[in-house]
Amino acid sequence: MNAARRGKSNRNKMWRTSQQRKLRKRLLIVCEGRETERNYLDGLKREDSVSKLFTIRIVPGRGGSRTQIVNHAIDRKRTQQDTPDRVICVLDTESLQSPQARDDLAEARNKAKANNIDLYLSNPAFEVWLLAHFSRTGRPFNDCNAVIVELDKKWTANLGQPYDKSDRDVHRRLAPRTQQAIKNAKAVAEQDHGDENDIADRNSSTEVYELVEGLLSGKTDWLSETPGE
Image (cartoon, rainbow, N blue to C red; front, side):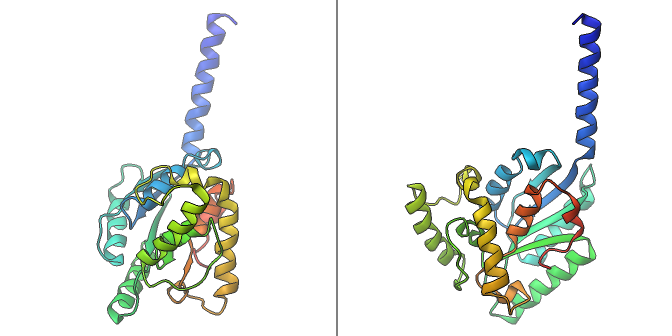
């Protein structure tokens, strides 16, 4: 191939790459947690089937109530240089025993809906999704620490090392089990807690499988659907 042809071929390749980038859906995902959710989703977004269709920016948590986290997502949505096609919040329900906690979750949901932000909740914590990679369990947990105790047992038995919340390779370690995790989490939601429509009443359960399944599906039409329905 002569220099002129090589130059034209390179320009065409660059143009196609540019067009592909423009066609990707831009997602902004705001997490509640500072490490675990970010580390997992950062690995997930690098999967070939995900990166071909989505450009994903992940914002780690900085504490606060669920309403404050949704407010943070609203602010980030408004100030992004490139307006995202979809804004997503990954949140825990944690303890919902008090009326104040229930009110906070209700306000977060209302604000998210009003600002076209999708919520994916885990009850009581994101680690319920990680646990689904090893077993199907819908039994209740008092809090995040209780989930981690159970997760650590499974993690150590199957992966030969203790679970570490700050593990940046968490997705890579779990990737071979992702489809089984989706099946487990879906069965828990639809069968073990089939009578409870609200995840706030489904301890333990998680909607994260819906997000993961959508990202890995090779499609983008699921973004028009409402999480949890």
